[in-house]
Image (cartoon, rainbow, N blue to C red; front, side, top):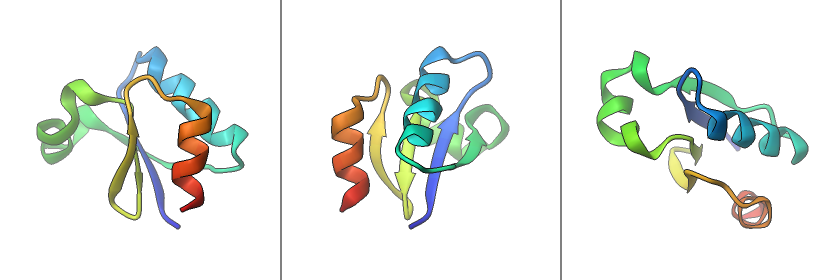
Length: 73
């Protein structure tokens, strides 16, 4: 399973999302939405965005239980 977290510097929701993923035993690849034009086009106002194998499984304010369920699929 390939887990990525699309973030932006200074985003408190992004920090929360990283913490949740780590609580679930994952260390996602972090990608800066402002450093990649395609990520910016897709996710600018949606960060943080959690992708699993390239598919969005969560965005914005994340719920631990819903995120846990999505990651177990």
